[in-house]
Length: 68
Picture 1 (cartoon, rainbow, N blue to C red):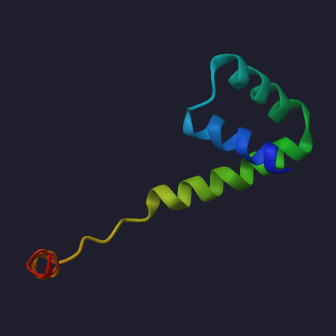
Picture 2: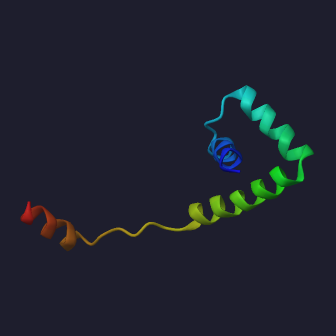
């Protein structure tokens, strides 16, 4: 299961080599477990991309730099 998730994350992030992409694409099309897990991970991926990262205030940065 962890191997499946690791392979799917590499596929989603575009880090999988071309031959691995083809193999994972086939697994997603042919196996329900892979298709389901891919859907779950894509939801997480979409949520993570939609969240805006907070920027610390300039005063916070200045305070940190003064302490250093």
